[in-house]
Structures are given as C-alpha cells and as structure tokens.
Length: 196
Image (cartoon, rainbow, N blue to C red; front, side, top):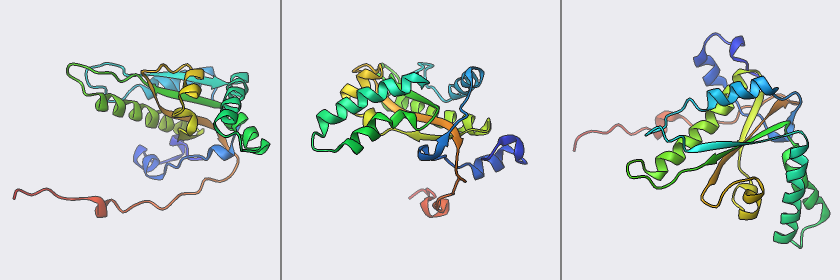
C-alpha cells in the first residue's frame, strides 16, 4: 500500500496512487476517528455557490449484511432465472470491504449553479475520499454497481427519488499486492487551442 508518509512528496503520492480492488479488501478498515478525518478531507472540494450538493450514507458492521439481504431479494425479482450463487453474491455485495460510504448527490435546479456542476462536485468528493483513505494507509475503490441505479435498492439505502448515488467508496486493507493498470499518455489527449 502507498502511504503518503512513505513518499518523498505529495506529487509522488499522486503519481503512484492506485485503487484497491474491492474483491481483495479486508480488515482493518478505518476506525471512527479516521472515518471522521476522511469525511473532513472529502468535503474540501470545489463547490460553486457553497451549496454542499452531496451527503453520505455509511455502511459498516452488521449494516453491510442487512442491506445485502435487501439487495439479494431485489436481485431475485430482477433476475428470477439466476441461480443461488448469483443471489449469494448480491447478498455479500457490501461485505467485501469493512467500510462502505455512499456519496449521494443532492444536485437540484438552481437559479445560478447548473446541476451538472453540482454533480461534478459530488464526483470530486468521491475522489477526495479515495485519496484521503489511501493517504492514511488504507486501500479504497470508487464503485457504483447496479445498486446505485436501481430505484428499490437506492431507496433501501436511504436515497431519495430526487437524489443520485455518485459513488460507493469501499475502504479497507488490501490482501494482495496492488497492480497498476496501463495509463493513457496525456499528451495524446491534449489539444492546444489556437486562434483561427
């Protein structure tokens, strides 16, 4: 795992950061004080108009299994042809990490601030949360999965009809070495604007 304190500079940390895989996130996860610190860092994002267009729903301990039971029942309704293995997987969806935090976008029409900008602010919160957890020595992955888009599942998580799940941040400690993935060459994505 890449800890900020182990590196020469914050730039080195940012250049070498990797997401953990939720398939390999075990204990320990953050304690209450560390969760508070992660959230304090998470909200330090651009927020045009100071609207705070996001909120959090935290899943830890037995709550992960409880919500998993609801997901499994919903999965049966959506996919009645799927077997027991598939249902068991959905039941354990939130058991794969010791801590999961849903970042909920509360973006809404505003006289000055476009909803899209509010949604982008929620995305920034998700990434700040991943960075904070990683800098503290944990591993994290930003996910959504089907439960972020199904109205019954989101309602079960406490998400209102007018809200959207921007991300589910899974936090724990990886049980396998993290592997980097190929990254694009930013120069191939760059266009320099010139006056016509």
